[in-house]
Amino acid sequence: MKNIFLCLFCCLMFPHWLFARDFKPALVIQGLKHDQSFNEQALVGAERFKKEFGVPYLEAQAMNDAQNLQALRSVSRRGATIVVAVGNTHAPWIARVAKEFPKVRYVLIDATAKGSAPNLRSILFREQEAAFLAGIAATLKSQSGKIGFIGGQEIPPVMAWGCGYIQGARYAKNSVQVIQNMVANTAVGFRDPARGAEIARSQFDRGVDVVFAAANLTTTGVLRQAYDSKKLAIGVDSNQNGLFPGYVLTSLLKRVDGVIYDVWKAEMMHEPWVAGVATFGLKENALDLAIDKHNSVVFDLPLQKRIQQAREKIIAGTIKVVDYRENYACPVK
Image 1 (tube, rainbow, N blue to C red):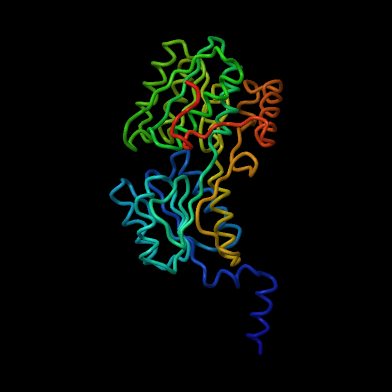
Image 2: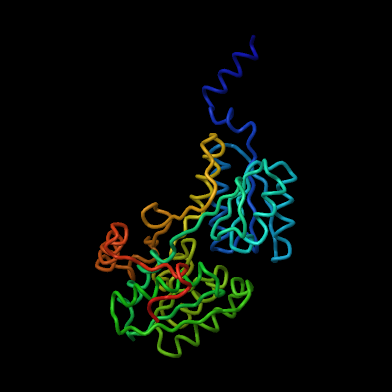
């Protein structure tokens, strides 16, 4: 009888404990965990969930494309009930693994899976919306009329960042010049800070005075070069304003942390599962521009007002930002 009352007490005081009994989340990433960018943002969400609900999570880390399949299978065999795979590099494999483990649910973040399964969901972001705002900010802060974009690799999310950035720049000032470079034609472009710094220095030598880098770990090299060259840079994925205060104009926040937290919580609470593809943007608070004590001087109140006006118009549909992925082309150059 005492045990029955104890169980009832636990269920009343800690209702999530009851739901979590048959729940084991897992996170799969590729590359460095603490990259001060995309992967680290994912870890923030996972750790927040763990701390709040007291539920540990399984983890697998692939260091290259060849290890992705192994990482997905590894957490599935270890008893995961829901697996979140972060990044487009998992796209070729996750549908295959979902069919191998039909009782496990899989969520692919930042890409559409190559294949389908009833236990598979893909989550995309409308990166172009936040990038549009960054393009406005960069153009209004530029003294030279030249701004830059540096992408890690020519893949759809990066191209969406770049295309939105150019659209925002043209919206702010049609005559602005945008210089664009890709770091590499493979995923190594996302983890080469030295190469990022080299490209940024080249753009600054050509007259660029504000550069936006969508290149994960490589972005830190771009930010450092902006500091060394006394120019401005825009960070990506996580809040990087504090890395070089006064030289990071803003950071484009991609709320991977919130997505992971929400997905795991919904699964733990046995909310209805929806397969297929979902997209999130400004309206869902999945994207944002970071403003804090580290960049408030360069991202001043008049600029904040202009950005807020554009944000509201995008959410309302008054400003329509073209997604590069619709036709794999950008309407402006």
